[in-house]
Image (tube, rainbow, N blue to C red; front, side):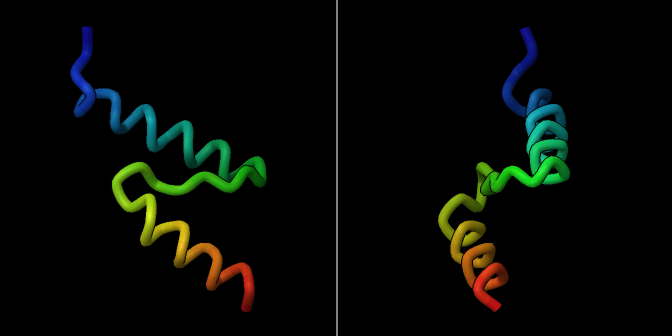
Amino acid sequence: MKSWEDNEDLFSTVLAELKSLGVKVPKAKKLKSGVTKQEKVSQE
């Protein structure tokens, strides 16, 4: 089995694909700050 560190690249790739499809997905590591920044950007 792969460790979580090995899967981070896959996970971030999946998130990037979801974003390209228009799905709002916060980054796992920066969940709180990421959501706050996305909300500010979307409001502008």
